[in-house]
Image (cartoon, rainbow, N blue to C red):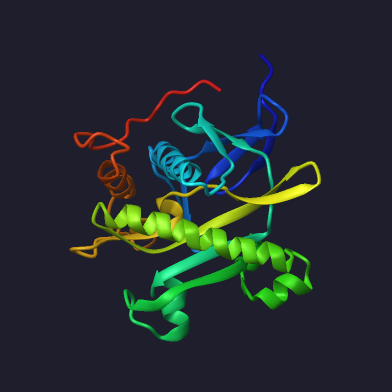
Length: 253
């Protein structure tokens, strides 16, 4: 059998040509990076957890009418997704002050924000994904005003869904990052949630204790990243409660 053609390899995923036109196979790696890849490690089982969790979140969004690129999970590390044209922006939704926002504005981490704040970063690793405004986005033609209206609407709907879901299992959704893609049905264009939704792209704190259950565990050397992600998966019912760690899967591509 011919080996699949690699389309792209990023810090956490590899994309391969899908089995049918307009599809892509998304493979989740165990690699962990932070501080624009200045800190790196391989965390056994991380890719398996992110694959399962992203499937869970994307399926939930599809079920409530928020369109995503997710089609189905193929195995422990791979999922089939719809090919789309990614808008070159990271869309960040913040509910509490943390990370770069806390530093920029001198806010104490955990301070509730008066309302969800949506920020945009230009996707370019060499530049460190700089913060940009809608004026930059319009001037450089990355997205139209109609696109940005739709992006904002999608981002806030995702926030409502994820916030309620996490609150129900005792987790505070501090902030998260998504990417948005364009798909075309003839001359008609629509926007969909793409890439992944996982603890790699969120800040999640236990409501009672403030314990971090996201990639800050890796960034700040707070313990086992897979233990944190496993706890999130168990609370959401994605994994059975008795599972304590992820064995390294043996997969055949």
